[in-house]
Figure 1 (cartoon, rainbow, N blue to C red):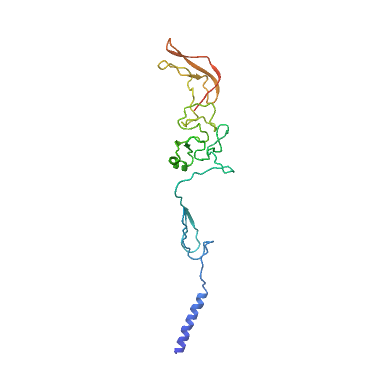
Figure 2: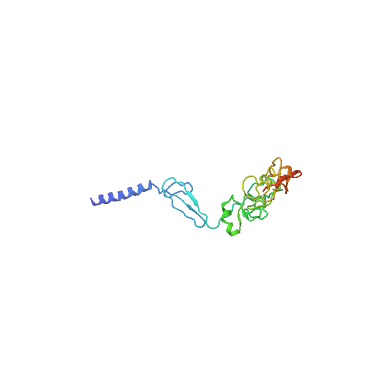
Length: 226
């Protein structure tokens, strides 16, 4: 009877070993995401990757974290030169390749390009005066007081960054009345658009009657704007 029991116990052990051989160990395959339990891997530095832990088929997700100072996104030519990111349709008036090499201040007027948040973030460090309305022409900037007879390079005459298509130098349509004995400089008749030629009439002050009247018309005069 003892021999029989020992043999029965030995048989049970052999049976368990045989059962284990029928179910081999499952190894997790990182390439396919299938198999056993996945482990979490974390990389150090400015970017960190995370993976989901679980069993069976999985899909990993990644998260990127940026630290430190922002870097402006730069449009470049094939030679790696910085490009003006505002539209420049006439290179005789505006620049496409930045002479400064700075994609945040392509025209060098010390006002920064507004299409990239990184430029605003660097404004204090780089000494920018403020946002630019057009970064491909250094004459187009906030506070511009001069008037121009040609558009700034993209079809607009808004050199002062006031919005709209540009402010006319002579917007009046008549001389009107004097103010403290002073008449306006003149007007176009008919009213002329920015950059268009027309007849300009200078306004003259008349002491007798305290009035203003048009002088001799000057044809082929260009309406300037800013």
